[in-house]
Image 1: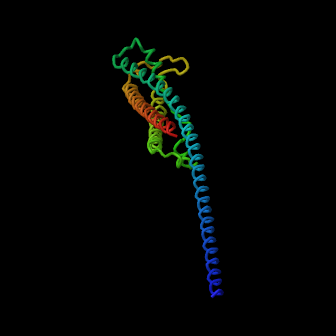
Image 2: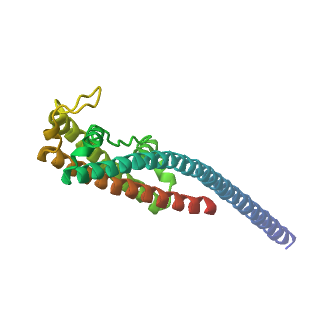
Image 3: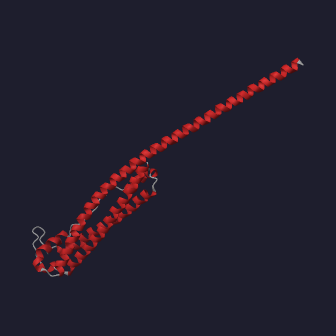
Length: 236
C-alpha cells in the first residue's frame, strides 16, 4: 500500500512539474509575441513618422516651386496684357485712317514682335512620380491638381509657340521694307494701313487675349493647390 501511495505521489509531482513548465513556456511565448508585436508597432510608427516628415518636405518643395511659377506667370501675364492693349490701340488708329499718327503706329507695329513666353522651373508632377514621392501625398486633390496644372502649362506653351511662329512667318515678311528697323522710319506709308497689317493685328490681339485667359487659369490652379497643401500641412 505504501509503495502504491508513493507511486501516486510521484506521478502527481511529475504532473505538477509538467503543468508548471507548460505554464512557464506559455508565458514565455506570450511575452515573445507581445515583444514582436510591440517592435512591429514601434517600427510602423517610426515608418509613418518618417513618411510624414518626407511628405511635409515634399509639400514645402511643391509650394516653393509653385510660388516661383506664380511669380513668373504674373510678370508674363502683365507683359502680355500691356502689348495686347498697345495692339488694340494700333488697330483703332489704322481703322480710323489716322495718318497723322503714323509714327505711333510704326512703333506699335514693331512691337508686334514682342510676345510673352512662360518658362516653368520644372515638371513638378513628373518629378514626384520619378522620385517616388508621389506615394507620400495622400490628398488626391493635390496630385490631381498638379496633373491638371501640367496640362494647362502644355496648352500654354503650345499657344506661345503658335504666337512665335506667326511673328516669324507672317509679321517679319510683311513689315520688311515698310519700316526701317534701326530708325523706325516709315518707308512705305501706304503699306502701314494695309489689310495684311490689320489682319496681323487682329491675330495678335486674339492670341494675347487667349494667352491672358490661360495665364489666369494657371494662376488660379496654383492658388487652389497651395490652399490644399496648407490645409494638409496643418493636419500633419
